Image 1 (tube, rainbow, N blue to C red):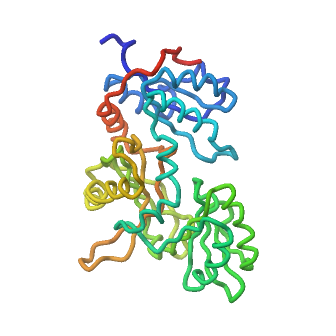
Image 2 (image 1 turned 135 degrees about the horizontal axis):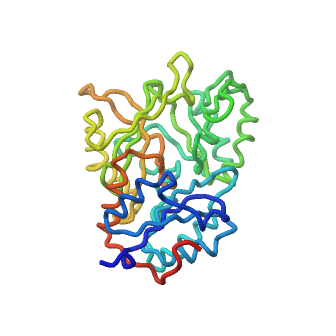
Length: 347
């Protein structure tokens, strides 16, 4: 097959509009992904996204067979509303978009913990859809034990707070991002501080504090419904100093013996359950996504349980070395065809 007939796959990440014409996959963090796509018979190309280049990005994506998108929902104060509109438009024209904004709206938000709480990864969670309901119910909930508040949309620990009762009218707050020092707020001040979560983030997830967080977390990487690898990490955010310090995330492939039980649960039970509960067709699952787990109480058999912390579907990177090949395989399984019209590689 002539190289020009290979299906184009645009790899989309945020960058400056002036750099679009000289962007290079080989010199980017996506070099391994580009190589895996090339070996699988695709023609990968960089697509730097900036709001000032929306027409050029739209034209480039319209001529692609697929778009793999790695743009955070909130970065440096910028959201991705304009990009999502472009992605919906080209997807409607036949371009495979991963992850599609409509799929992110279902699985890449914190409300997924509430919507999938009946799965084996569930925990004591509640989703507050409006400020009045939060003000009415949260004080009694936090009086029964520490809670973790998470804005429905966000990344990197933005707006994530551990909250525990200090006395009848005050709470102690520890933030996952920024200054980790505890501070005391009145309940009224807490409620006021979280009001914008209901206007900007689409709600607030309220999860019981998991006491085993100091033992670390494991990230399970998925390509559609297949495990692409793992990342194990001792976390520092929200962990009391006496439970130890954080460390780097250590990556391993899907065959890592430590996590084969988690792999089976994800592939056999939880991913199909996720699709069922959220009404997501299996073929619409992202080509790369991940689920972060904390350790829960051991079961009757003595094995650890896993508690879902969050799902990432917007900008999953970095990833295990094995993931790019599986992403390419997922795209090959979807039998991509060239986009609606050809355009220059970079506009």
